[in-house]
Image 1 (cartoon, helix red, strand yellow):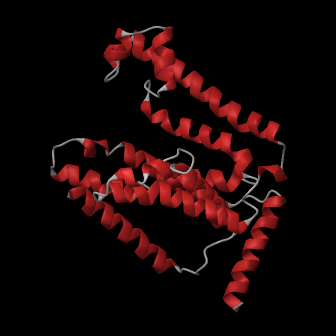
Image 2: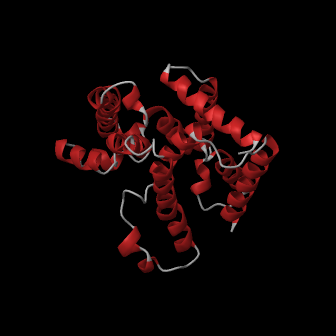
Image 3: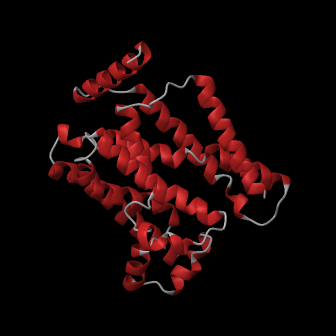
Length: 259
């Protein structure tokens, strides 16, 4: 083991020990702040989904490419913070602290939006369809299909990850097993859709590898957050390498959107 590898391994150990003592990481606050700003930028550039390819559209497409990292960062921070919850409290406490709180916010927020859209449809774009079928049965159907306010999709996704967390927490301390789970999820959630995008028929993958558990990119980021914080990257990258990777990714996404 080289001196650099030794330093990286020791740093990973120090971080894990610090987490056991409840150390607060400033970099997590920075990631959350930057990601919140990025979410605002994404929501102010939704004109990119129109068909009018103007200069403004191109600028909005660039903003989408630059700030699309926001939600993956949120998932990664959640995985980093939660996948070792057993060191801090029981599964019962975990569900009380996380699942119940987020579930309550989703239900109450959905009820509030449904009432506003149904009773005051003229004040909200696209709300007339809710007003036309307004009622408890329609609410239940829309709630179960995330058809009340679609930006709540993140809450549905995070609840899904919370349901899996007690199982995932059993494998994260086995590095090789965690790497296997990450590799499988990467293949199913990223590489298979990429293959479909370039014209490869999905029938060659669907029977074996289209199962929901490993086909979730949210799960991939959730696992990666814990892995990177506790085990680090196998290679040491400096700031210029990270910057070049980010700029390359933005360029590819931007040019891909123009095609």
